[in-house]
Length: 385
Ligand code: NZQ
Ligand code: ZN
Image 1: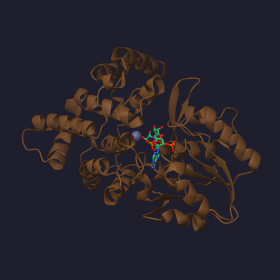
Image 2 (image 1 turned 180 degrees about the vertical axis):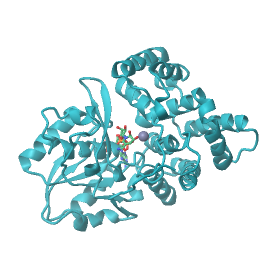
Image 3 (image 1 turned 90 degrees about the horizontal axis):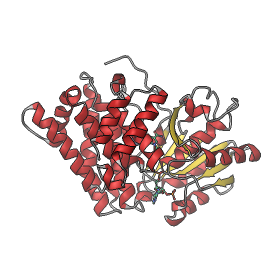
């Protein structure tokens, strides 16, 4: 295990009817900007709960943050923050609303000439940010307890990521009951995203992190057991609660401490979203199994351990590892998330070509130890037609 430092400053308030806790969590006297997405919070009663809890606070609102939040939209919120002298941001929604709000928080204080540089430099130059609180409505990204945000830009067809210790939410409210209204598509996406956050940190060359391994395997097993329950009965509180806590745990820093991650499925997946508009979870279901097959020898030992411990397979490493990949694909399909590009009407040759060129232009290698060149990435995409 490599040396590491772990600090997660987000207070998690978890459980039924916890939105009411906002009245004491938002600092008294704050001028709040409530940010939200396309309107799901009006349909499922979350907005009403939030406004009730904020009685007595000065609140402005900014809605319309899209899935895969857009720089162009978020800049409007930055202007509003400055105009209204907002000093606290409250994000109410899924990962896109939370990520967008992290960007708003950093960009509102940014001194540089071009705020897109926050993304271009992955967060360099972010030295002040407004405080954020969150009410999470979609378990998937882990954004509720990390310092990451992903922002898309229409003008350049880019989807880029930044990280800053300053944009961790001060608190996040996680009421599993607000996720009953998620449809099958978003439920499936959330399970796949959590799954791949776990494998990005597990399916690597490291082998001496016993606690992190068992932690990861526990989350994978939980997803396999609980995901189908939430799909067949959207109001299954225990299943929704387990999925919500799994998503937070998968990307709040503890599981990946002590070794480098892989993150190639995310790197390639972001390009598929930027060029073709696939949901984030869909891109991961397509790309991750392709990477495991392409880098089979490199990842075989880890795949085999996963096959034995999570799928209870028994046999030679080679066979177990291959079976484990097939079982995973079947699981994603059973959650309603297609694992091939044809399911989304994307031409693999065109996508492979575009994404190879983009990584060539950026001089970007993917995966652990930069083990995937742009040509490797193209081959992986072609294998997922
Ligand atoms: O916009 P509204 O109307 O709220 O509807 C949303 C949206 O259409 C809907 N939704 C959310 N909660 C709901 C609900 N519908 C009914 N009931 C509810 N309770 O779901 C749709 C998708 O929402 P979105 O926020 O886009 O999904 P998700 O949470 O999967 O976030 C995806 C974004 O997060 C980024 C992704 O790249 C993508 O841009 N990620 C962020 C990460 C991070 N910050 O650490 C890590 C991830 O790997 C990921 O990259
Ligand atoms: Zn993800």
